[in-house]
Length: 228
Image (cartoon, rainbow, N blue to C red; front, top):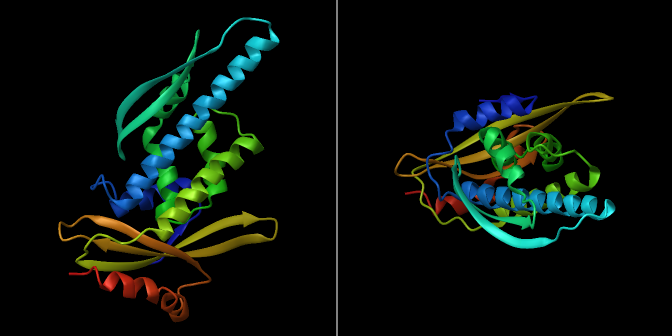
């Protein structure tokens, strides 16, 4: 069934319908969790850098004072973070901003793995939710983190066994100065013997033609060895 995504909110709905939250150690969940940790820790370091630069410009004294640990549970499982601090403040405000919108943030990042959403588009939407200004430098940094994680997701070995393999098409639409541009994402979902769903992989295609699905045949053949 073709599903059309015109906004992040629609992407969240599709992610929710996929019911991908049941297994903490699935590949996309662990990658999303690791990526979230890197983004949050990077934002905390940036916040400390800005604080120290501001203190220096006012000729006020402060300095770095190491890190402290924070653990908390999310939809993606247990998140462990190193929180940077100075003598007078810490980066914990970034975590507090995340906690207020945790479900939305988790699904933004997961959308990169499950639906092939643009990492730059997700980065632009993610920063205001975390209470951060959207600068070109920060968007580029977050996009690079997401790009590396998505690339690792595509290259990872398939280790699990599946009872069924489902193939679905998701249409991503965006408006440009030349009108609406359509991009089709072909998604492969596996169901484990316990009835849990995994996103196995996705690929960008020109449409849901037979040729497009045939291009996923190498994936199908590799998954065949893991279907019991």
